[in-house]
Image (tube, rainbow, N blue to C red):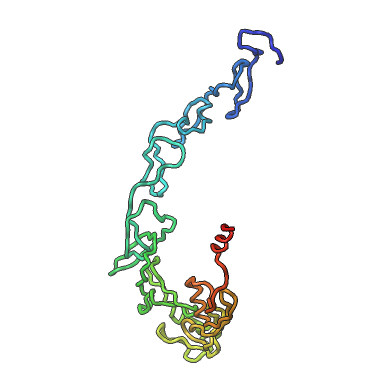
Length: 305
């Protein structure tokens, strides 16, 4: 209302109900027309407490308040399960909003092979937990491993000859020696057994098409087909040997590479270059004197001018 008449409610007031909407809720202001901001909403609401969902009767402005110190709580202990995942470890803080504090209890965790253990905070590496078991002197031991201790695996395969730590995959290009990992009560089948290896080392020929088939056991050598090995070495060059077991020999082919300054072309061994790059030694360098100016020399002359 423009130029309202004088009244006893408030200066410049029309005396009607304010009815303005608040920013924090949908309840309109119930006071008569007034100057300044509307007071906090006093409408009674029933809201659940954050920890137990107990019904609490509070004023609207308290339920919509973003301040943790002003939000309604029931006052009893929280009792929610902590993030460690152990159902016996509950939050003993008073009812509260937001996440519960971390679990402060320490526990003993075992590695996957079961040979080592250590003290860690409750719930540590829970997402990497794997079920493990083994039999020692006829007694089964079961546990949940949570980490790899890094030691070579001493468990034998079902052949009783080959330990896990000494086995390399014949079809691969390098030995793959297993470290700490989960086990089962029943020994795993030997990867060298006749039932597992059905092709020659290079993979080109079925063993049934070669002499000395079948192999009597996992200790018998794997027959080779005599064809050239089709595998590529890490450098990309083909293996020069015929079908063979184990990894391919180092590459001795020579390659031409420019030096760092670009003034020379250097001939280096392929494996030497690959090892140099793996060690982070960078580009090849020649014996010529570098003619490039250093940046600090240029900046010095610019400053003097």
